Picture 1: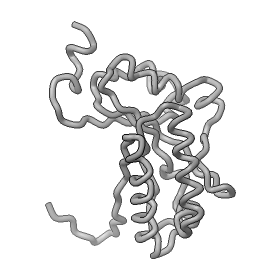
Picture 2 (picture 1 turned 90 degrees about the vertical axis):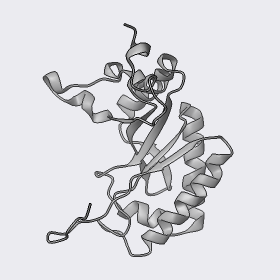
Picture 3 (picture 1 turned 135 degrees about the vertical axis):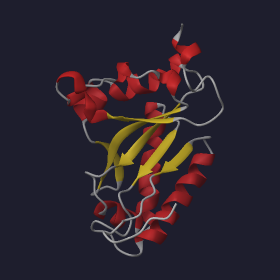
Picture 4 (picture 1 turned 180 degrees about the vertical axis):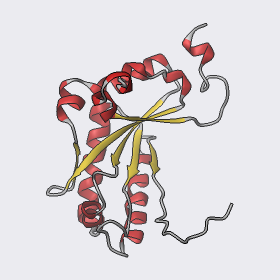
Length: 186
């Protein structure tokens, strides 16, 4: 049976989104996971986690240039599309380690959002990604300010507006800080 015939993504029209934590390559032993271990027929969208934000220039940056660039992991990841022509590949910016403070500062002014968005467009074009996963963990938390909520919306709208020109996808992590004692309803 070929990969394509057994793949979940090729059997139905629902979205199946898969993430690759790029740091998995550094795990020891059986926990090590390389890009080549991915079966791209299982997913409709693959997301490479993570790249980050240069807080001095408000531009997107590699968090691991040796792996991302020198070992060509970004290129190898995007090339998974050759094994599944319907596959979309995105890159996630942010993550827990990146924190919230620098995203809070960047999103607080239209000019810094514009600089960030221009750098994202250049990055996506250069590396042939199909979009961005905005993984800001979390607006108005972890060093952020209450205005982050509105600034996050502004950033997302501005990214979406720019991405429409290229037919790119924009996804975002949504989160809610849960305190002990909070009750979750189904």
